Image (cartoon, rainbow over all chains, first blue to last red; front, side):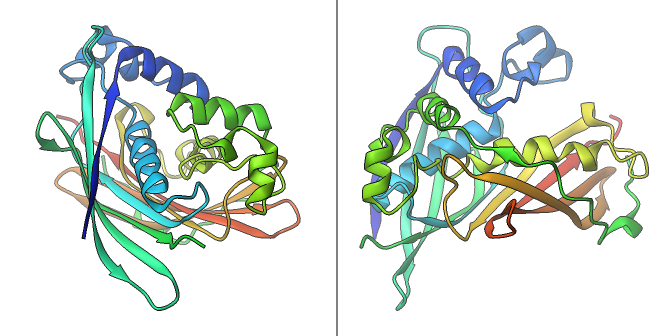
Length: 130
Length: 148
């Protein structure tokens, strides 16, 4: 079973807000000068911001904010966020891989930006709604 | 850079407790656009059986990222943090983090490999309450990029 796709818009303002909320002030997430100096095409989103958006999609699919029991990803490609009002978009989809007898649902998740996968081995296990 | 695999299994002393604030959870939830009332309203969280507002699933990283310093600043390992990128991340939850939790982290080096000039370091962080109740286990794989 495939779950309804979710699309999240990501702008520079979102990265600044996430930096403050998470305490991750690495300048590659807010300074083009420093991002390009270390060989990136420009400012990139925090991997953990992408993972947080996927986590949002997963909890919303599960229908409960406390449903996630296991959640893992591999970061494979940076999400470049241009300095304009549009930013970029991350699309998140998932398929149900397994529903266990003890009420757990295992999801295989895909996250893409501009048609390219930005995560691999993204998996979540959620408790099925009470 | 090359990492010494003989440090696999090294554990670090428990970190000082991190007190999870209600406003911090609200701020984090707002930053990621998570609008479920249980992240913001203690009454909504209590209706789900929690003591106070519930943190989104990746919130524990805020706590473990601070605890990571023990590992990345360990002079024996000699990690050059300016060359570190985040490889993998996983959380296995006993229960969600809620406001009022006092969380203690114990870091263990679970795996070290070297491949293609890069070093790969996996840490496991056991996050418990100050009383020792398990909350979440967190795995982070860091890639220490070799000189180009």
